[in-house]
Image (cartoon, rainbow, N blue to C red):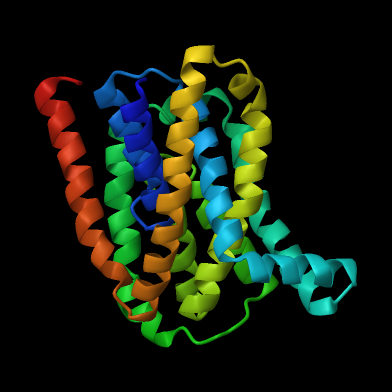
Length: 263
């Protein structure tokens, strides 16, 4: 993988991690077009860690407030952190049970194409649900269901932010609260993935370190911009417009793969 390819992948990761168009689906397709260079999971984890920085920077006051509140045993902070933990459990269970099957799917452009089509359908449901979503807080049951949506989004092509926010809106959670919970959920998920794949990251060949660093920086910067854009579009109730893109992208991937016999 060249430095230019890494930067392109990083930009795509940062934008698509938070916009509801599936970062994993885009990375799988781009890596396939580039002919590989780094194992898919390693690239995803490295760039996900960079986008973790985006979340922490944008929501730094909220994160700091939760940390301080938890240390001071504030009931509201403890409940919110507890709900984030509950929402993480389905993804942990899925990763542990899926094993090698999941590893194979993470590198399949066909799976990514199908996932993008599914993401479009998920986003389309927000057309009306956004209008009925007004709750500023969410229940423990809602947290678990949103966590199940995040678990499904581990598969390439299914947008994590799209699936979790769409689920939250369907459960009546207001757009701003849904976005915040979705992004803060990603902190735990990304840290878990990074720890799981740390041995592979530390064993990278020296010539691949520089491209990975450049790609990670690109992901960090583009991720901050994507979060800002995501929240603005969600507040203006234009979230479902992304469905058109994911449907088109999914169809293009599947048609291109079929016509070329696998690029």
